[in-house]
Amino acid sequence: MDQRKGRLRVAIQKKGRLADKSLDLFRRAGLRLSNGKNDLFFKAENFPADFLMVRDDDIPTFVNSGVCEFGIVGRNVLEEWCLGGDDRQIEVLKPTGFGKCSLRIAVPDGANYRGPQSLSGMRIATSYPRLLKAFLDANNVEAFIVRMSGAVELAPRLNIAAAICDLVSTGQTLEANGLKAADIVLESEALLVRSGGKFDPSLESVAEKLRLRFNGVLATEETKYVMLNAPAAALKKITEILPGAEAPTVVPLAGDADRYAVHAVCKESVFWETLERLKAAGASAILVLPIEKMML
Ligand code: PRT
Ligand code: ZN
Image (tube, rainbow, N blue to C red; front, side, top):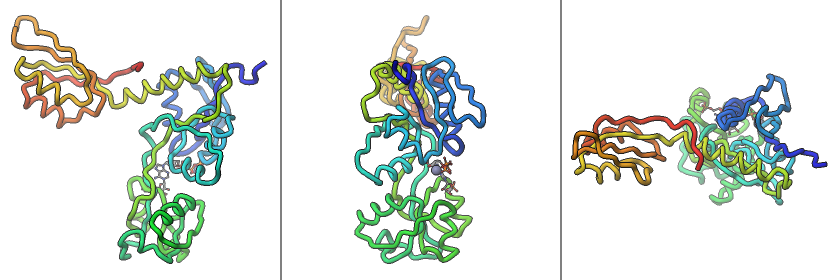
């Protein structure tokens, strides 16, 4: 009898910046999840998937070993982990759009930083020694890497290091510690990953189902349904402005031979500026509606 009994396993962060949004993504994919705060393992009630709640740093190990078929992890954690050895069997399926940050070099406010060469011979504190080493190597810079597991931004003040390499999102932490951001080592966000090895055949079709639902959920984030009215002469221009729309539906408006209703699925962000351009091109009664579900 198959150990898994046709149930997928998914690794997500138990507590931290990615935890709630990861669960939310699966909920939006239609999974009913009712985990208690302290559950390390729980089952989706209406889908053959079980969830392992772990530290984010362990997610690559779980997915790589095939203990879990799927996981959600920051690119920063994944790439640092991947640089740690061979035989990596993790496939990135999709960026999720949340957990965005960048791994950056930062130096004290008054420092005269003129690019990576300025780091030559310096002590640099980081929790990402492999990514930092790769960055230094790529720039032919020799420096001393000081490994820290947290509170990296304190290192310059404590004279542990002259620069740091740490995650930045708003920049407030750097500012509060008298540091300024310099070069970007890595742009990161949370990624949906899958184990690269072959799945147990009993899991293949469930895995594909989940992957398709995810594509749908993530596609609806930016995708909008746009409706507007326009005179015949403006149709060509308006179609060109609609962002990421393939073939809009154009139907004549009742009682007005020259005016049409245009309906389109726009796969890119529709900004206020887009609406202003549409209006300037002759569109009126422009509506932008969210799309709740989508199957591609
Ligand atoms: O316990 P566990 O190991 O699971 O969690 P953790 O403490 O290692 O990670 P956690 O929850 O802090 O972050 C999880 C993931 O969120 C990271 O691996 C990144 O992919 C992503 N992420 C996004 C961030 C940030 N933004 C972020 N700003 N992770 C950390 N930070 C920290 C940063 O290290 C610095 O201390 O926030 C501070 C800077 O933030 P700003 O807004 O002041 O610039
Ligand atoms: Zn962690």
